[in-house]
Length: 345
Length: 179
Image (cartoon, rainbow over all chains, first blue to last red; front, side, top):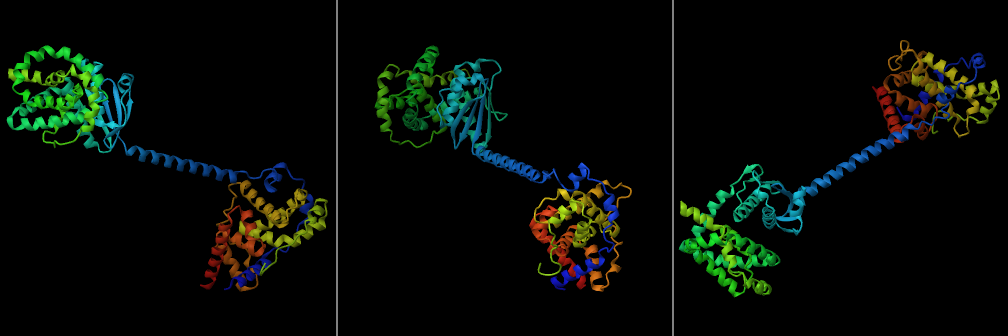
């Protein structure tokens, strides 16, 4: 059936079905006047049904807000996911934001940490920052408080790798500081410093063997050069610190010097010679790093040209001449008590 | 209109005459417009008796409220709105016990009044197969000569919905008649 035909039939049908009674005029005449409510309800006068548009605008606003919220959340999730977090907590609590092995932001999580956090430049290598932070905490004497421990929490990207690096670095720094503090990384206790000291002893004795002596000497030379460049800026500060520390340690060193003499000269001599060559910044940090890196990379490659750095370092030469021999003492310092222990054994 | 009944043309001046109390004017208006309005009411109520009552009532209201009419170019739409509002108002005020579910009761339309068998069947199908909205749109467009835009305003539905409902309704009708 065509549409036109359909329309015609419908029209005819309705024509026939419509009532033929006509309008009842009696009823019309009897009807009174309209009431207010009738006017409003039937003639729609006065109330212009305001809900329809209002309703749409509300739903639009709500959906827009929801969308905005979603976009914001996603944006922040994506942004945050590219960072990892390292939280070092003793009593002062320090939070580090790490991206690609570099600390991009250092944040104090409590008031005690504020002093520690200031003057830490960013971006910097994670290892350096951890080293600095732990040393500063030690300086303030927080490790001396009974029951204190280093609690490290690692979160976010590359968690495992970071955890490994962080715990290694923390261990090294603690062993250097001779701080007997338990270290916890993500709730699992790693080796306390006592054990670390024992390890250090082992490594030192290893270094004394004839085979490794020359190798170690070369490495030391190289490392001295490398670390010098990194720490030139802080050289003066650290030197002062160094001399303070030395005063405390001189006497035990003197007594144990004879005992350690047999093992040390082999490793020390090249360092000395290198410093004579031009690597004159024999500051405390250099030697510390030397020792740490000796343990880490005994077999690392040697030859690297640091002539540029040497030139820079010459500026510091004069200042350091006086203290030339002290770094050696420093270097021996952490080892000596161990030596004593081994002797006792 | 391309076919069928042309849109009912009403002179707006008639409302002024009605407002002034002219019975002839009201009679005139009734004769002109009662068929489309009755079709609308029948479509809404699906009950012949109720539609007749509502039709009478609609004209009483028009007589009472003729002075409220504002010239807006479409007197038919104004009258339709009154009829529809009366129907809705009746639905609301009717006591629950006597309330009739108009979707259920659709058998009291006197199809016998239509002599032509084809037309009768078509009308029966119109009331039995189609949804209320589809039927209303078809009646408004075909019988009352409303434009789709006017229907969309009258029914408070988007134009697209009105169009798709209209086409769907016609398709349903044709399909039912072919079987």
